[in-house]
Image (cartoon, rainbow, N blue to C red; front, side, top):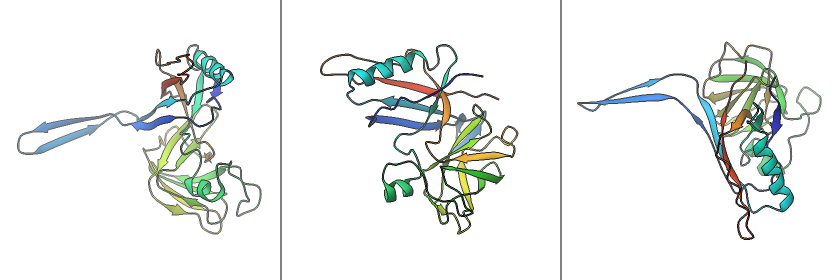
Length: 220
């Protein structure tokens, strides 16, 4: 099993790109005819750029760069600009998910997936009327290293029993992700490794803004 690391707790990432890559070929022919072929499994790619860092935070980044892929390690990569459902953040500020589940018990950002198709997830164990917006993320968890990150593509609200059906992209691998499954909404992540030679760490009095890129890796 690979070592799973956390993204460094850098305050206020300067910029982030976090998007899926969908393999696709497009052929253009005469007469305005276009054919496209989708193949393979989509994956996430990201680039992170830090703000001007203190010496201590810069050391965290230097250490992270050397332990996030060189020996097979992976890290939990998430979108720092959307670390939890946006409706929660707008109502409560930048604090972790909490509250009470509709059926009782404390809500910690996880819930139970009771049914799934390639493009939908039915989930229970949420707070009553919990709100999701297009662009939120959901992490589907089979085990610590078998996880799948998806973007929610339509606004939807859980009912008073804390049950909701989410529309997601891209498709969930149904052969790998069989029930039981857990949904995670607190810093929903996928597993990534830093791209070789992508780390940039200038150290100057006027420039201490390290950056790197990374891509998703899969385990089964």
